[in-house]
Image 1: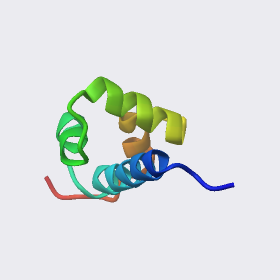
Image 2 (image 1 turned 30 degrees about the horizontal axis):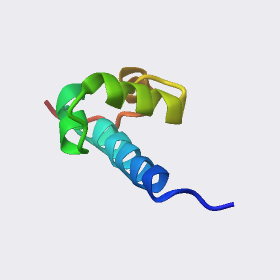
Image 3 (image 1 turned 90 degrees about the vertical axis):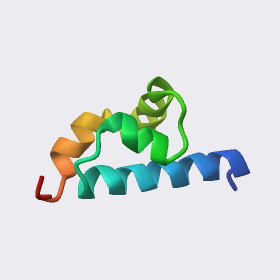
Length: 68
């Protein structure tokens, strides 16, 4: 069964956010803004729903070493 356009769009934003979290040292709020969330609370909720981890937890488990 297919997904709605909105669900596809959200999935794309969350996937891009996971890339940013793994490959940059950007703050969570900055990642949320870059991928199009005005509310960090909404971003964290959507991310956690998708990955069953908060963005911070996901970053700790998946971050590639990035120079600060």
